[in-house]
Image (cartoon, rainbow, N blue to C red):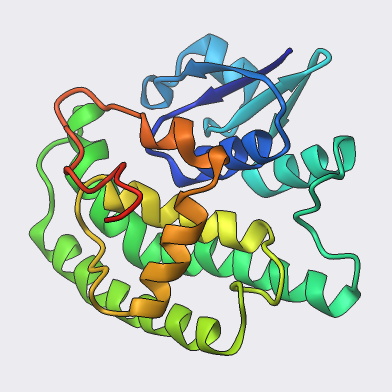
Length: 221
């Protein structure tokens, strides 16, 4: 049995969960209060971050290497292209969402609205929230441009890039911070990926004190 130490709204944890679910791999989910930085937690990952995947006694950290490890364990259905250029494009977009999007959007919206309260770090910074709300428009427009030229974000097949993007957007959708009316092509893409069986557990997440909006788990949102 695989064991994943995670936080429900963490996009990095969600990305790993989506890959495991897509490949129909059973996993035990353990919620980790990473902000407490307990000795036991830091022994599992001295970097003090989630997700952490335990497999056959080994503790694996960093979401993208974990996802690639899972791909090697269970190659089907494939989420990493065999072609070098396609694989590069997939990795470029995973980095785009986990680095640029995360820094400009997720950390300014999700972390300000939810993480600060949950971890007792004070009140949201309105300046950061305004910046995140401004920046997400740019990213949605970029996604729209990609999807106007491709079936999926990185090409003609669904890849880890789609799960990386969906992990961030689903976390933000939980707090109603995605304007799905901005782009019909992005909304259609999200509806398509949201309807996959791999998304079911994600859509059932509940965070105490933060009920999701009605449309959150509605496949016809």
